[in-house]
Amino acid sequence: MDSGKADGQAGQPREQPHSDNSSQQHVSTPTEQLPSFYSPRTQPVVTDHEGDHKLRSDLLNISSLAATANPPTSAPSSTHATTTGATTPSTEQPPPPSLLSPQFTPPSTPGIATPNSEQAPPRGVPVDSARGDNCSKKRPRLLETLPEVQCVVRARIPTVAGTEMFLHLYTNNVDAKEHLAIVFGPHIRSRSLDAPREGETEMDRMVRGAYTGRLFPGRTQSGMDVTGASSSSHTEESAATQQQQTQTQSAPLVRIHSECYTGETAWSARCDCGEQLDEAARLMSLPAQAQHGGIIIYLRQEGRGIGLGEKLKAYNLQDLGSDTVEANLLLRHPADARSYGLATAMLRDLGQDRVRLLTNNPDKIRAVEGPNREVRVVERVAMVPLSWKGKKGGGVPEPGGRGIEKMGHMLDMGGMPP
Picture 1 (cartoon, rainbow, N blue to C red):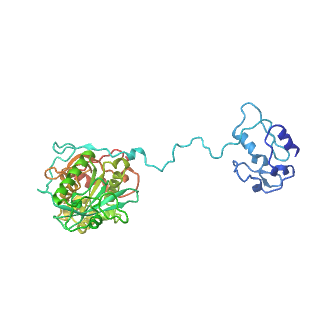
Picture 2: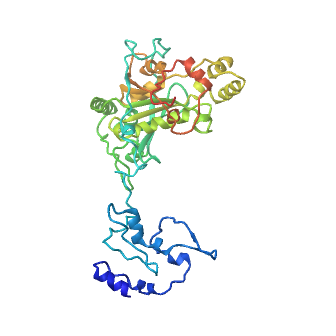
Picture 3: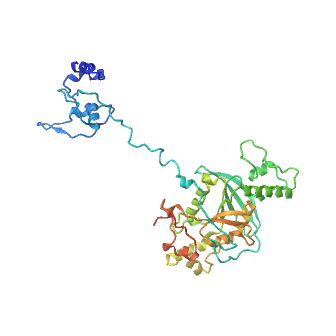
């Protein structure tokens, strides 16, 4: 009690009532000696002559820990141990160090935002196929006229990444397959879908996706003025609107992607088609890319156009030592039997005549532009999946990239690990 009064006279804070019994001999376990709100620095154990291990009580005092963390510069030791284990400060001591304040606090929590470099739209290389700049020198074999395509239905697809896309389903007069256009950006619309059809109601239009804005329960109007106007006049008006939007908007980012069941669905490590599809969607979902929009033309031409059955045979030939090109030739197929006329026609139906093409294949540039350059590729953007950058594991093309080298792909090695 007397020592507590002396501390009060010296201008120090009065001890708490629960410490008034400190003058009595404290016989307790080491765990009871620890304050409930603080875990002190680990201290050595003192062993008495009887072999009992006891913690020094003076090392459990917060004031002594503060003095240890902030030692005086010129004065001698400011505390001394009493017979009861308490300390009596001789000079005013600073408060104990903070338990939560590190020396450096980051300006923001890491890992909750994408770096700014990833938010910028992907840079491209200017392309001019008329002069042969940054594209293939050879001219691909193209159809004389573009196929006829029609978008039969469109639906909004919310994604797990938090963005939205619009899935367009197309039919054509070339094959019996249904090809897809995955569109990022509500300003990109299909002319054939928006055109009115005979005998349909407003509900019919909304069900097949020919509406403006967003659908909601109880909506009864598509929002498109089709009453009292002929189909041709509406199509011309829609085309003029699309042309105006194309001029005001910069060229969208476009990826022509061929179906790959093994790489996208069956987790095959023989190719990176699934990763390229994911990377294309990621780039088109960036906030900085939203005003330009993006389109993934998904063509149903499995195995570079030879079909799934022949593709699996080619896999067996690869196990026997062939690469993709050699396997296709051994099966009496072209090295690449894909065609891009449908992609060109679908881009035109979506009102696009200038695009930034996401590809490493120089032959795709001329092939996508069409026989009369109906679509102009103004830039080529390199397709570099995240696994190539070492950011995640995934499919790896053939050892040594023999198939890629034979196809003459332009690979942007910048940013790829050595």
